[in-house]
Image (cartoon, rainbow, N blue to C red; front, top):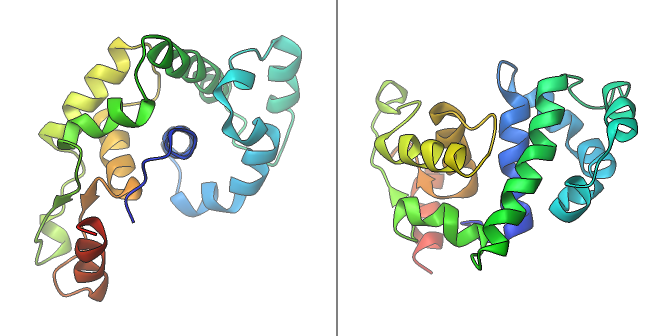
Length: 169
């Protein structure tokens, strides 16, 4: 099911950035703890984190303890709030890169599935211009897949048809 909730999209974007250079399973194992220590991915709270909170996060083995990724989370919260302050939903900002509806790909093999696209390039550039960090095109494409913006299930996968049907519901 495509994801349109602002907070859930923010969470997913942060987790995709945290995953950079690591396996997705590493992040998934830590997801609940991330939710706890990052105030359920509430941008208003995260944007106010101070050096003491950053030090606590960097000492917490329950998350990826990378200073740049923690700093990016705080910066991304501020950037998300700036988008909202301009009168836009974060969801609308992100979904515009797929014209508001999921892209239905029809890949036959994994070799066909890209790691980035023209759309993820555009999203990456727009997010960077808005002040976001850890939002390269490959991260954005993985985000688009995970949020339901792009259906990259192979046509031989039963989920391809299910996801396609759900996105048209």
